[in-house]
Length: 187
Image (cartoon, rainbow, N blue to C red; front, side, top):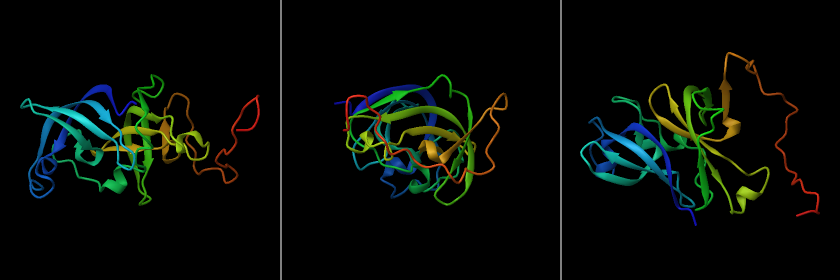
């Protein structure tokens, strides 16, 4: 069982209302931290391990409470993360190919927000992660606004001026793959 894993070490800020169970601290700034781990529990958003600049270590910090600079506007949780964790077992990977790439995230509200790729969570050994048209990654993205988000492949448009020609619209004939490919029979 995975449950918790190391991530790349990333400087960040945690919104102070998190430290007060969201009962107070909304008007104050965020506290400087280093994110160094992630925790996955089914039915909950990805949650992160952080060390604060004062030496306090916090666990289970939800993604909408993490940002990259003071004064960052907060996105509601439903705009910061598309899906809850699929299970306890996952892998953290920072794809070298995606590292540093600019990416456009399409929110539930229809708004396109630009950001930069940080790393990816991918799920395994759960019912949903094994079904081709249900599997989703959580790509962790730092938006230009400073807010962090966790979005799946089909809600991201990647940018690389050296070779990607951006789509102006999704081709209408594309369909989500539903087949399981195997040479030894049907699963």
